Amino acid sequence: AQTVTQSQPEMSVQEAETVTLSCTYDTSESNYYLFWYKQPPSRQMILVIRQEAYKQQNATENRFSVNFQKAAKSFSLKISDSQLGDTAMYFCAFMKFSGGSNYKLTFGKGTLLTVNP
Amino acid sequence: KAGVTQTPRYLIKTRGQQVTLSCSPISGHRSVSWYQQTPGQGLQFLFEYFSETQRNKGNFPGRFSGRQFSNSRSEMNVSTLELGDSALYLCASSLNTEMNTEAFFGQGTRLTVV
Image (cartoon, rainbow over the protein chains, first blue to last red):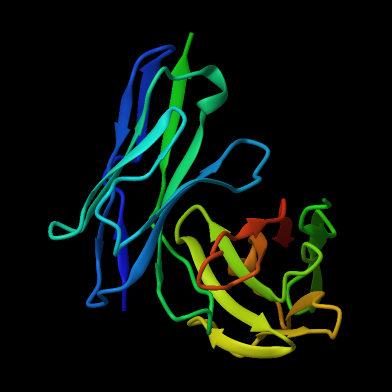
């Protein structure tokens, strides 16, 4: 079974600064996907960024980037130029690659990020 | 395009009752999965359906069941409700292909058992 660990229950950052959220995972699989999801107070889960394990290049989406260390099983999220709208719970998630045969996300416990003005 | 729609948004039920939650996926999505979110346990996978077939099930008692209809809409049912079933229940839909793995979530149904 896979496990996902987010060691920072809460973090805060000043607007316009950079913050890094940590995530480690444990799996015996070699092919998998990793995700960061954002859940604001509205409760809507929104995909922030996705990384395929077979890709060595770190994924980036505008102000969001990841540091994927496959050997260390580490998948951190960096948010640059933090904005007030980034305030949310952030979840790291794992999904085994199955060729589309099933869909199951394993989530970490989440990190509550607060961006202060 | 319309997002994932979950109904109802809020529910209050009494212990021992049963409840049915509904999820309408994004048009064209045939994979629908359900998650339970609680402060203590976080987000836990319940089950996943694809083309009316349950392909995967999490570690929940048999009181939790689901189904998917031919139009991909899904329902989950919880029988003999317990206080511990109080949670936010999230539904997600996906194209679930090798090239497209993004799950789109609904806003959830907040179930309170009293």
